[in-house]
Length: 325
Image 1 (tube, one colour):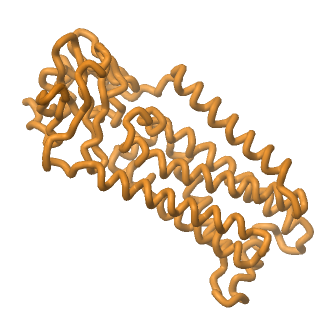
Image 2 (cartoon, one colour):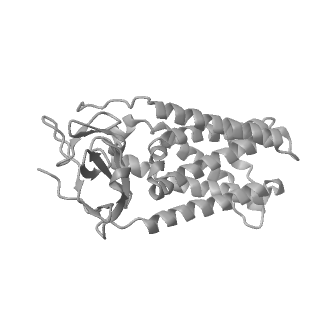
């Protein structure tokens, strides 16, 4: 354990996660370009990159509520930054394809031509679609550039979290970019349908997650049966408000602490119990299960939560106990 910043190491799960992610994206692009018909190959490539980037943003926004509905999906949430970086790369490929095809022979430089060539103002809706795409791309670049833990430590977790919530306005801009672009190109109607299905999925999952999670301090939340929690490991229980509790088992004893490490919000519920302390899987910070305090000489603390057993089911109090002195 260290009081200084340490980079996150590559684990076997992270390597598998990235391999599956990259493989899925490559398969989607190859299949799209292979089987799309009725359009020239350059336009098909642009549509492939653009739709892939949009689906990746949709997936990033769906992982959060899905993990809240099913805690087994939480590892996907904790590695979502890898998904964001890949999304920025695919979106950049889409932008490069647009500039390299539509403006390859323009007497004006590609970027100025892009900003002045939008024909949306001549249609009935009067709204250009290109600026929305540019805004979303800029946001994706900023989020990808600040995805490393170095920026999380430098900006502080609250600022870093607020910055990355900009993915939501970027997503709204992408929906407008796809929808308004389809109004200018009859061949893009499937992309407009994709945008509508995506909005339905994102809104539906967020609504389902918000109605299922109990607000903090309003009743105990079921954490499952004690025998379903592995020895020395935890079950992560969402408690609303973007928070979660990690319920650990050590022998016949159970304890519940806040899931976020006090160092850089690492997922304590993915850590192991060593000598009565939970070890954060990110940087090795330790917290005693009994009071949530780091062993001396360290001073970090996390909240603990009360547990009770009823009819063979563990329940956790979403209201945290006061931090130990």
